[in-house]
Image (cartoon, rainbow, N blue to C red):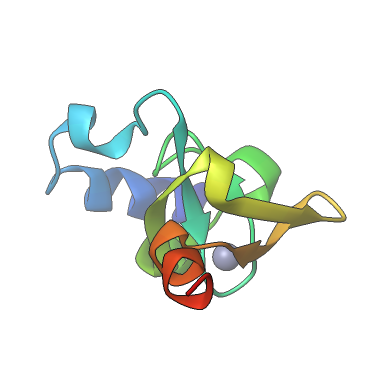
Length: 84
Ligand SMILES: [Zn+2]
């Protein structure tokens, strides 16, 4: 995992550290595999480079979990449209 670690550090150079830590109530979610992390460049749960590239910042209340991963993102704006 040494190569991966170097690459993550390389990616990190392009962003301010404050931008990579999810604020309270939000997490980074990888749309490819459903893993999530507080630190966009963190290595929790096997978070890797592809997760970094596929991640989006989501509200924790909008996430639906399955087997410890995010299986669905409930968009509050979608819910509003369906409710009519
Ligand atoms: Zn991933």
